[in-house]
Image (cartoon, rainbow, N blue to C red):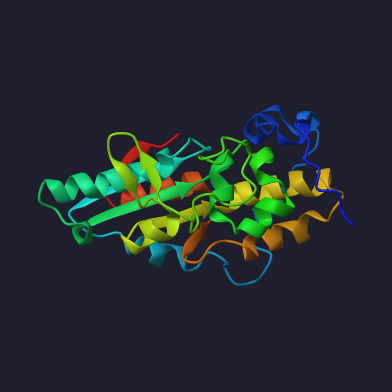
Length: 230
């Protein structure tokens, strides 16, 4: 049995580690970054990504940059954008909304069994919006009931519900590479095995992109206005 223990030291900000260099990486080596330089397979694993971004159409376009758990905001704001556009004459079918899950927000792109196995609520400081405790499952994938927003009431803002409204979600492969290596070392597991498990656990219809910052650039090239979602 593997011990599902991920300590605070393992969770140190990977951007800070990268800037400090190999000597300061501590629990993470530069290997995950080096692996990104050349694809593991002859074929480009991101060959379909450009086609995915070509789905961005419509009169009003926006990309939300989700870098960390930020209560309901990475999911409430896309809904607010659609609702208020509808209220001012543009139906959701004529809007394009992209949410980029990167850095500490990547667990929201993953299945709940991975949240439980790798204690992602603790690793990423992602709290259940109801209990306010570290989440033991993905709180924004098919929740038991809609979340309530003061002054508004119940609002369907789960990822699956937003996808039904046409919202496009993508997740950063670079962050998955780094954080899966952090989790693997903390649990004495093989980094590549853990990475493959995380990638296999990406939720339906969420696009894996080379990096979140790459995706933000592509979305803006497609005419999306940038909005920081926390």
